Figure 1: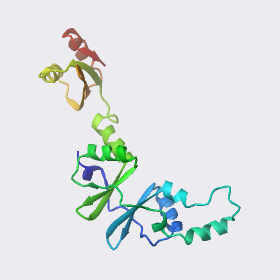
Figure 2: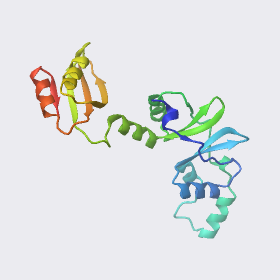
Figure 3: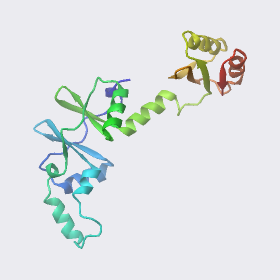
Figure 4: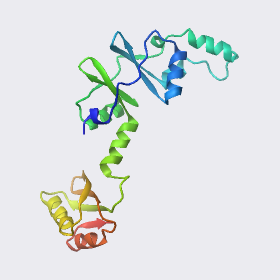
Length: 207
């Protein structure tokens, strides 16, 4: 699955000379946690909730609400944003986006096509993609099968499933050094007969 399939296209952006007050308003109104910062069509930074908090007076301040609001209108986004943000290409694989977010400890990535900003992908998009791939929202039986890590066992397990007339809607493989785990979501409600057959064959199957 590619980033472009799960990203939000044409995301909201903000200018570096816009006020922090404007950024707060956009994030609050739309439920955003970050905003790409664009100048003359070019991505120049990223503004996050954390960075907004860093330039916002503490709740313990003696300033009045009016004074705080006035102060926020005088601070530019450029004074709070991170420059040179981590980005990803639209044609990159989704797992690369997940690795980048994890390794750089960020919650979102601007998505680029060359030098053009075309979207944004967030942690929530990654979670949704995982849920979709595992078929967690779909009805049907789920089977977990522990198999030896050697060629051909996956085909054998799928053959057993196919012989029952069940259709595999979703499948995932987790490989270990000696043993792997195959997870299936099937278009049937009861897969106990399939699990029993697989256990008879020496696999460890759980429905």
